[in-house]
Length: 342
Image 1 (tube, rainbow, N blue to C red):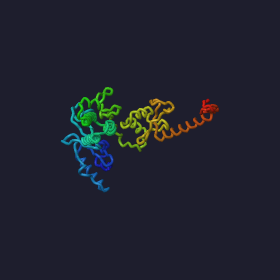
Image 2 (image 1 turned 120 degrees about the vertical axis):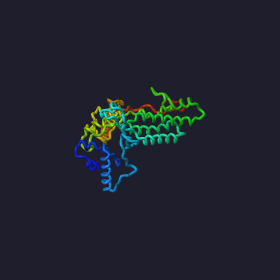
Image 3 (image 1 turned 45 degrees about the vertical axis):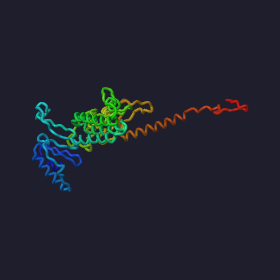
Image 4 (image 1 turned 60 degrees about the vertical axis):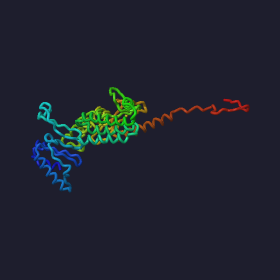
């Protein structure tokens, strides 16, 4: 389909790059600076889909300008893509008087709020720790998905909304108590943060604003994990916002290579963090004692280490001196008079 759409522009490479086609599963967006080209692309796509027995759904098909109009921009995969008018010197390298910003869409934010409220309402009589444990995965998952776009202000607004619904939850449980008593029971200070929704045992509600914003780097051209450019995909993994900080540090220090087989990590690989010196033998949980391995390499290393440890234990048992024969009796012997003898 993408190849058919690109045929409507001249064969010049620069001209073809002006036509953007972004696809994910059955959702796609066609972008061009001329409306006529977009309309022509719509006709080409409709004809191509008819050939395989499909058609565009009118309710989900929309044509819009990203800068002008009341409903400027478009939503795609939960994000809103739109251009905003700014001053000449605030538009970056383009200097065209506008800036493109990608934010979480209004529908995505609204759905997230409704989900948070539903969880809080369903835990009216539950312990505080149970509510926190239910909310934290929802908050972390939503923030990790939206951390690559312009979300910092939205994270702050969601924290305010979370404060409002948890405050109502706490006051409803104790209608005869003062606000001060309620706040002291359910909110505590930790470090520089004074108002943390947490219980006495340390269960703490995660804030949206605690998630660090990490920009997504676009895949270069038509690069594919199946294309064989292992170095390129290894470097991308070392900058991925969806990987934990510990894994990123290990991957960077190992230059994207497995510590066991020496092959590069590529997109789709599974890895595990391994202790070079096992903790059972005194190894510490520090970076100088950690390495990143493919999951199958980790299993192989663990099997080898386990067999070596088993042979070592067997050898130690064979060289061990036999115990001395016990000459003492484990029970007390009594004489006829009833006196105990050792």
